[in-house]
Structures are given as C-alpha cells and as structure tokens.
Length: 266
Ligand code: FES
Image (cartoon, rainbow, N blue to C red; front, side, top):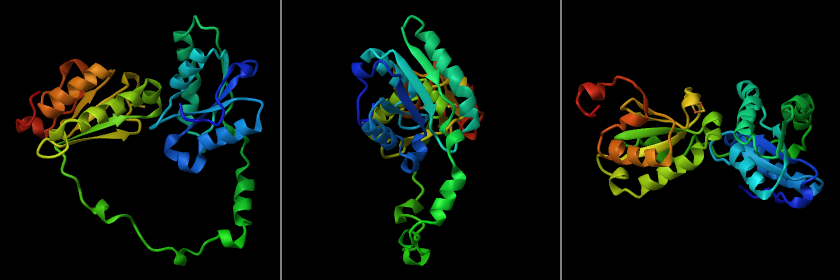
C-alpha cells in the first residue's frame, strides 16, 4: 500500500478509515495519494488511496490490509474526476460482493456519493482564467515536439500479451499477476530478443470482465481467463515459448491466419 502520509491505526478506530478511490491512469493530474496525504496532515481521520486500474492497490487489497490491521469501519469515496458512470454504477455491488466474501468479519463498509457531485467545475474554470499572468504560458515559448525519436520504430514481437488491468480485473487481483508475468518474461532470454520475442502490456477493460483476471495473446487470438499465478507460468512457458496455447485456461479463440498457416499449434 503506498504511503498515504499517515497509516491507519488503532487510535483512528472510532472514525471510519476513508478510502479515496481514484484512477491511476489520471493520477498525474489528480494525485489521489497526495490528496490523501494532505487530508491526513489536517488530522482527524485516516485517508488511504486505492486505484481503479493499472497500478493498484485495488480496493480489495486495501480492505484486506485494513482487516489485518484490526480496522473495523471504512468509507469508500469515488474520487475520480470525471467519474466513469459505468464504474460508479458497478462499485456498490462489487463492494457488497467483497463484504459477502468476508461475512464473518466485524467490518462496517460504506460508500459515499462520488466527489464529482460536489465539485464546482464552473468556479474552477473561472479561477483558471483568472490565474496570474505568469502562469498562462504562450505556446510559442515551448519547444515543438511530438515525442522522442525512438517512438518512431515499430518493435518486432512474435507475440503480444494484452493483460487487462481495468477496474473489474484489478478488483479480481489482476495487478500482482501482471507483475508476476512481466517478471518471469524478463527472466527468459529468448522472450526478450530473437524470433520468439514477446511483450506483455497492460490494457484497459477488454470487456469479458466476469472472466477476469484475463489476457489475450495476439496475433494468435487466444483469450485466457480466471487466471492465477500457476496458469500464468504455464502460458509463458507453453504458449509464448513453445507456441502451444494452454487449453485449460482458454475462454475464447479468434480464428486467425496464423492458425491457417500452421504457425500456431491449436
Ligand atoms: S476490466 Fe478486465 S475485462 Fe473488463
């Protein structure tokens, strides 16, 4: 769990710990962890960041950590801005599912309305327009650039594994599995150079969320779901290295030209 500026502790047991649920992909702008740290510095409550996507920690990670610390009450505040309406609708049910899985725990879990409902965006736009003149920069003073020179080259990969770190897969503990996959792939020389070179990239929601954690290996068109560490190990070894998809974890196969050409052993 990242440093939120003040850890949850027994002295805060009377007030619910507040989980600020933000979006990692937007965190540079929103900086949920810094907001939590500032709120913690103000005192009175404990604030902890959790993330919908990509980096984690996910809400289940945070909740389980709180349970282990003996915390008995938590409030979740959806803190992403702009809020994603489908996630806003999904979150209460996902928290209820987590609560049901921990039905024996003495834990009061509640959810607040999204912060978006309380933000005065009109006032913020007006304030931006009224910023000090030195903070309003002429674009002509900035060096023109569309990116780094290396961003021109298309990398040669035999296969790409797109690992879903969307909110619902993150809720199903996709992040440590993604990190595990990247670690073992890095340790295998032939997956990092040569004809078997493969990459594993994180992706946003790929849609079959109920079968998460999941990934798709392209261009083979093989979808894997309900993954765990042991299955990730097999996918790396048997599919990425040996070209044989692991049938036990396949949830869908797209018919591809590679199959027709005999480049993959389905
Ligand atoms: S969040 Fe992973 S498929 Fe939707």
